Amino acid sequence: GAGVSQSPSNKVTEKGKDVELRCDPISGHTALYWYRQRLGQGLEFLIYFQGNSAPDKSGLPSDRFSAERTGESVSTLTIQRTQQEDSAVYLCATSNTEAFFGQGTRLTVV
Amino acid sequence: SQQGEEDPQALSIQEGENATMNCSYKTSINNLQWYRQNSGRGLVHLILIRSNEREKHSGRLRVTLDTSKKSSSLLITASRAADTASYFCATVLGGGSRLTFGEGTQLTVNP
Image (cartoon, rainbow over all chains, first blue to last red; front, side):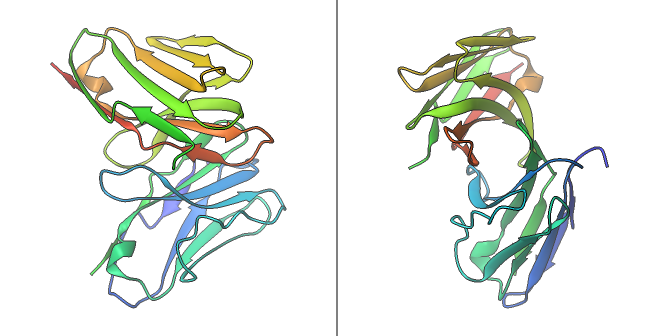
């Protein structure tokens, strides 16, 4: 597609459930990032994939968070046993130089 | 603390005025980028300035980079109400690693 696509756009889940967020990158972009943004705040780095290198997972806040990406294709961010503090917009971006962002997934944990 | 830190945190101006936002960073960089975000969703890339450049222009945007002071500024001239948004700087560290964002400046342009 022409841009970065994220799905779902919005997700409401019950506390304790697992959720999976998806990011379809721009074809050919080797780098893929996941960020979390709480209301009124900046972007919190979560994880970074660069080609076939080992991902930089240093931003993942707990072991409930994991992400996968195979090659330069789709990435999924999984949050297990969701908590209310996980409520945020999760943004995916892909790049070769400048980053192109998806519209994000707004996650609400109730 | 953040690699890129913007100031001010918030800026409110009248339409037609110029808006200046600043970004400071701590370590050497390959390039510095400015982004805009409307309504808390995806960010849009505005301009990229490389470490060997001092100034770039794009329409009403002017970006400067001072590597000796580890700082950059974004100037929006003749602002419009539609420029109301959050503006973020982001850096790519020397060595070509990940893109790191600051906390952003919330710009409000009053009609």
